[in-house]
Image (cartoon, rainbow, N blue to C red):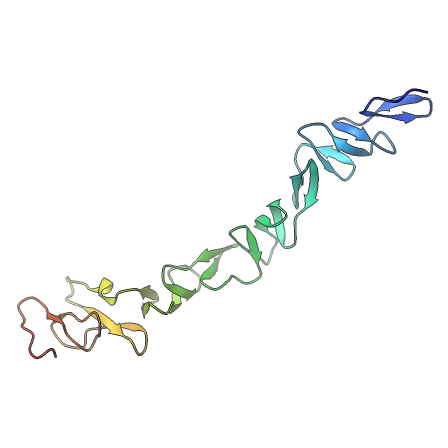
Length: 193
């Protein structure tokens, strides 16, 4: 009564070879318990790649965690099931702060933006050290200055917004929109007002 080779099982008095790509099987030839190199055990079968919703780990197909649709490890999603959005290997029912849903993805809001919607550039609320102007956040309001139109902008610290300089013909009012620091070309500053 001899032993059967590793990739076969005793059936009565003879050895029967395990299914294709099985390294071992039990209690019957079609119930794989381990697989040949390059294959993954999925239930009782050996497959070249794991099906959707599972990933290969230690030569076995392992279920992705909910709400991953596909994954590369237990805690790294590649895609999400319906109703969830993807960002940085995770799935979210609602996108986290400083991101917005675009398609099935959570996309990071533009720089300085704490809350945006529909697109990263459509900001509703800025980080504390940024100033709001027309759905955008700015570290310096002077970034908005436009020589063509002659418009210059400064901070409104009370409301955390950028405003056009309130003094006419003002070229620089960056620290405070109501205080002119430098006049537009061909104008002279009179008493800082």
